[in-house]
Image 1: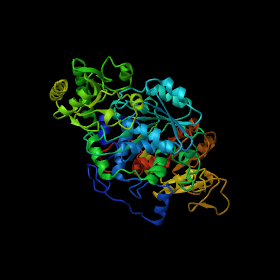
Image 2: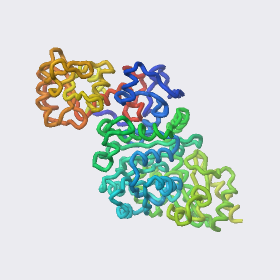
Image 3: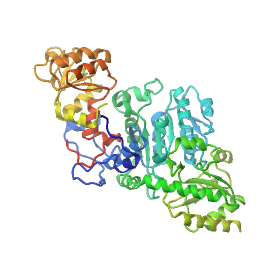
Image 4: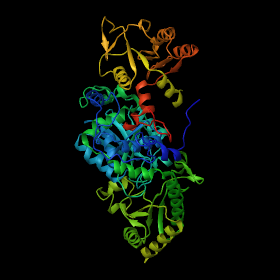
Length: 433
Length: 157
């Protein structure tokens, strides 16, 4: 006898939320309260000592936010999760829980621009160095490892380079050095890819994108696998008495969810990048339809990619779901199949013939495709990354991040495919004029 | 592997828990677990020869050197000891008529587990009694842990 194993479609709707204990409410209540009463002085002491589990103050935990945390942990096949105010906040929380001054990170070069800035500029100010390597070559990660390397960071599907990380191979490189692999799984969403099942130790999400899915609300989540051996001698913060939390040894006390407890108590509690209950509730409304939306995003994007590939006005198309993508075999291995082909998300990139100017004319001529700096919305979104999301990077950094000067990034929405193709066609016509 | 239904039944039926290897130091995991179970209505019985001097107490309960010195019935024997030390504890647990042998996280003595099962006891290995209680009866979900609970019923403690 074993417990029934539920499928992601069911977890997306049920995980983390049973009917409300106090009222029987079936849908998730929004617990819009900063603080929670203690039953007694002893109860208060037990809560502060982490000897019992409960809510104290919503900067640390909140029942509505917790439902989102558990649901994403379940969807990723992880042990536990901590939510944050944005994807960047969850990434910062993950890295700040692992790293300290003097540590080194090996990161994929093909990262979201904000992540490059966090590693190359912001964490560097605090004495943490990062080496950026080619995300498509696991041996490049191995070659960049140093004795003081304490984390490997990459995106499962690069935004907007659409390079695919060989998660199992890079996890092996990280584990050979006794360090965790942290994967940003924002673009595939947990429905299309589960890095933890392939060997990753920590997953971070911008839940603002496909998890929320409607372009309304910012949120982030970090998930831990529960399998990393934090007691291997390289992570004293996980094993030694915590000076920031009156001597608790996190790994000894909390075992397979120690990373999340420490992230919550030593980073979220201290730096305060907390997600609000209302925002968590809005994201969860989106998560309930994640599987339905992702299937449509994938089938629409595949048709858009095929349309662009066949169009003489388009110079090149990059979509990992196309059979001629250089990493197609890896995509087939790592991503869920949607309608008989690998589900490669709604994100694609292409170049309009005529370079940057033609690309800008294309964007300005779109009728309902929105020119915004976001992805993973129900709406089709378009942008020119070199002049917007990756503008802070120099031209070499842009190329390292997979941003070509003429690149248009498209986040294909779930409108009718014929209408999306119509808008692309008329905008290409305008761009060619 | 214990199912959710089995663990719920064990934690409902067992109300008196002998904690073998309970530490008196507040920051040790055994103390965390015992304090948690006590505050959720269970009677905790400390068993640790290190502290079992006359009149010694942990969490307000008298400390015993051995299971067979406890003068009242015990439902569960919860083991915070090294795996290789569990077999004699299992034998004592059977002798005193306990219903459940629970080996904590990292404690996995299959021989002891088999022995207790052969005596018709419930057995659990490599799990924390506090974490399982919080997982199934509420609390652990508040710190974002994946409890595995999928249900349309209102939780009842």
